[in-house]
Length: 90
Image (cartoon, rainbow, N blue to C red; front, side):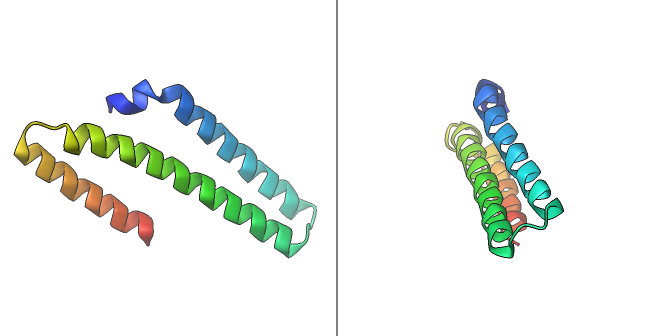
């Protein structure tokens, strides 16, 4: 996964931001914060993880499907990505 290595700093920054959001959510639950605020934080975490997934997936598709010169490798990779997306959507 060269694209993950190439974009490591950017991806790690997003992951650290997500970790901060999860930490804030944990603190909100410990402090018995209003349900609406907790739900808003949960939605923010979900959105951040979703954005991370889409960013890495887009790079993966570009590198391992679109740019892959061998048809058989593209087909296998596409099947793997399709399976991943089905799992992610559940």
